[in-house]
Image 1: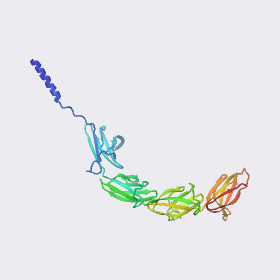
Image 2: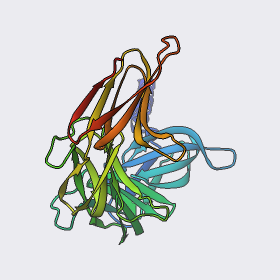
Image 3: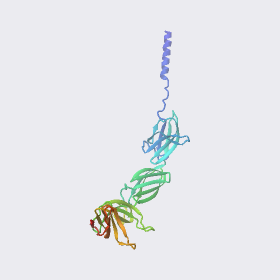
Image 4: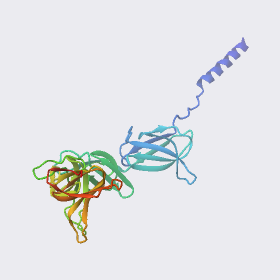
Length: 361
């Protein structure tokens, strides 16, 4: 009996010790935890996919290598990464911050970045009284060489605190502005880009038939001439009834069709549409010459050397050209195998009319 008691007591004590023993502490399931704020001491950006964290291995020189071992879109990123030395990169829009970090097994590294940034909404407009942002406007935001971002229309972006340059454009229209923002601010800024749209059309004569071909070329020019007598071109398009973006101001519209060129001054007001119609004062000459090798259209007058200035020409049996009203010489030449002498006839072109010329003999 005594032995049994001792044995029982001993078993009981062993069991009690086993039940009261402290279990080993579990190893942490993560070894890195991050957070981010717009400004030092400011609230956390929380579970925000606007922040991107990435961890790159350190290269032999102690800098950032190209080997990325982990990352996510989340200000409060948590992960278990292989132990080692890394460069942690935090991004908020086009703002980036880097920091070295060493991750060890059995402990959690806490990282927090302060972007020292502001939330900026840019609202590009054509005029001061425009009620809505212009979706076709592009605005480049820069802070020296350290930061740049670009938006179309109205958009919220994150920018570093300090002085920023806004460079806006709608087609050839331009506007610049310098602003200053503070870290942690939420700012909205209008950028006025004085501009409108121009719709260009043309007629063959004043009050006459409208031009419909897409072969016509419209170009908008500055009104003042350069030293060599030319004007700088702002924009251009082929075809009628096309929309062109223009800055506010006074300009010249040039239309080209065939061998005809005509110009007309016009003005653009900010936030408005302008319709421009150019009078070409032109007609069409269409030549058909069976068996012809080449057809040329020339001026009827000759210079002191007795030669005529060539206006237009092409190889083949047909040729069509748009010309100003007047008399022209049409010269037809034939292949040597046909053994026909060149033939030259006179044709008259009238505004807004088509002249068909058939040369057979």
